Image (cartoon, rainbow, N blue to C red; front, top):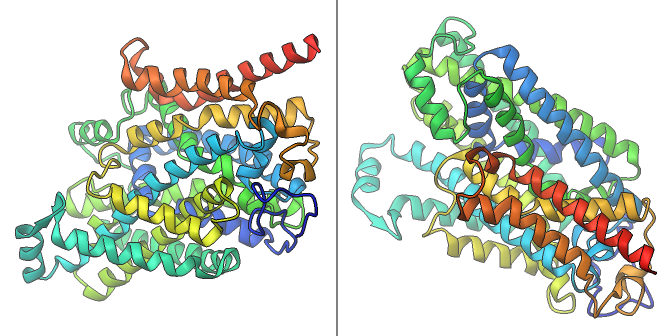
Length: 479
């Protein structure tokens, strides 16, 4: 889409409002199958299932969390449908035409972390398969490089490189890939669950897992509270909501290609509360059935598939989980930084180059593996950084502007959203104050209670949004 008055410092074809809108409900639905059906998603869902203590608690906690996710994604998605612009361009309305680079780069860096985490998980599934061979197992044990086994490094680089092929032809290739990858993982998940349930002699909901094993595994997940307690259930819901913190910001990167709000609403309905609850339930049943078969609480599906007697079934499982993780990386960790880095230098960086930059940063992070540790802790730490940004953007769009944005002005460096030199100081101040309470104080001091970090994203959204609203209303009153 060509815009005659657009500044070259703010515009390229990838950042322009979407003209082709062919992402119907099925494609929107598969944004979520691709985002959730990964090894990290399974690990988190299985961990939270055990923490809930029983099936009823699980349905309450995960169900409540999934409904909140559904509502928030609709708010962000509808903004994408109406404006047709990607996340960093929408952020210009609140942060300023150049100030939007701040939230864009924060989201891009987070995507690079998640890109590395998901790639590591996918390569781990292949390593688990290969080490069934005694010679490969010996090589994996004896040879090391960059703080990992040499086999792990080789598999990481291979999976990392394969993902670059998917973005060669832009967003239409992304849509076609996710429409295939998401359903494929559901098939493999069901095969895994059915096979283990038959071996276990029936469906298990975790009642047979000894309490000492349950306590150890839930402690490793990083969620506080006794399994089944109200504190644990609240933490489960909060962690589940926070897991999607990155996509709350940039879901408009996808919804802008939808023809109308109904397509987004329908796709979100099936892809979020329905799909999330069923996927988590299958992950939980698979994990508890695996305990009945192998007498271990295995939270990683690649650990389960590696124990299959059949090489063929183990190979299918490993490849499917690897493809699933490629799916989430393309959706959540390629698309966003591709647009975000392009937003910084539109004349020099396009969608494809932005994706390459994200991939290179993830590769550089691999030796340090900052994603290793508890699932909930990593999710909370990463998610909390983005809460204040979402609070500011949603407050600006829905409460200050009432959903009305001059799209052309988003590409005009001297227009309505120029503010002060292209920056809106009120948005920056509000985001920093929100980040102080969501990320800085809970992670780097002991000034706040230990449970605060679990809800850091929520505090960030609320404090960032309230401060921004207060500063904006004060300015209007002064004017």
